[in-house]
Image (tube, rainbow, N blue to C red):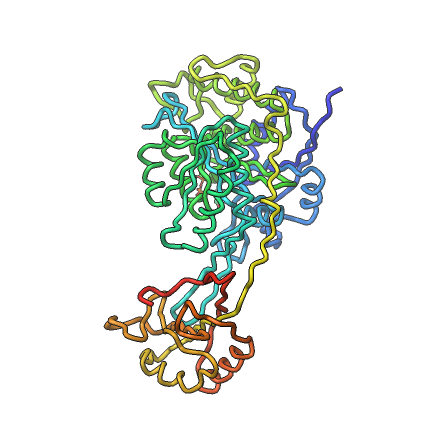
Length: 487
Ligand code: NAD
């Protein structure tokens, strides 16, 4: 008797229940070896007052099965409701978002019939940590935190994925020409890890030209690895130009739990009409079958689905006079796929996922520990300056109370405005005063936390509202901070 893999499913909202039922019917007909538990998440749970959108009982199921196949969720507007997807990703440590974007021409219209790429997006860090503050009446900030283990894990995952799925090249996209420390680390780690995969080609592109090339020549890409925000944006660009927004599935992978879903939303405009395309969720389910090591069932279903597509059996969203034979409802399309189980496509290349070859890819980042010589050498003190006091006046007030430290520069939104600034009318509402042990960056010596505390007390006595401080460190003598433009 074959062993069934426990999985959790959530029907979701809007078209969720219809496309999930269609997907489950296909999985059952293909004899997927699944032991299914159903949980309730989403709109109903939100409206019962649970702002996370997920009840405690659902966590218990996820802890048990470690696999979730999820229908799309409607997030109610306003009311402090938290994105369920972000909650799931963070709580379950789903560090990699894997989104294959391929063309299904000519059956699905696209300008790029040969496009076939996979985007692997870092899923837990960067600006999506959601650490935001309002420092003054006018200035808001979003903190972008990037960790070395976070970079190592996602980059390693991308190369492992490329190897296991027989892909030839991994492209890293970052903006390290501007964000030299955060994106710079991502790029650096990419170069380090690429050395462990000599069989796979690697390249790096700046995210702006990279995005332009995805839009203009997507065929040149194979696997793409990138940071959270960029990955979010390019995933939609790629899915859109592939023509497969309604067809694509995605996986959110962690070392212990994985979640699979369609990339589209709950489409409330067509809910309950039996016209939604179940293909996005079905493709997510195929990724799930590969993940739980049922590649035989995954291949069976994907080949039947490709055959239905090339037989011109299409739901309304992909229907065209030229390439469709019949416009089908959700249920009827599922039946058409079921009727083709065991058949192979002839226009598309049949798939054949291999037993064991695609089982879980676990990535923990390289085990190396870093212990550098870390020295406190200064501090950035950010000040709310509601009356737009000039930088010269600000410096005049601060210089007598600077204690053991030197006032090196005053900057505003990263641009130096004191000393010797040519800026005619600088933005003054949010000023950063940089203090160091000495003006010469090559001669920096250690300062004490007590020096900073004394300085803060002095500034407080002068009546300044310090909205934030950032300590300045060197690591083995290397600066752990960037200079202001013009500094
Ligand atoms: P959407 O993807 O639901 O719909 C966009 C358009 O595509 C609509 O015209 C819709 O009818 C169509 N469409 C989507 N899926 C389709 C399918 N399977 N078959 C045929 N047509 C399909 O995006 P939206 O309207 O911006 O969002 C609706 C709701 O979904 C919102 O509450 C949003 O927060 C939520 N959402 C959830 C997820 C998720 O759970 N992962 C993702 C995106 C949006």
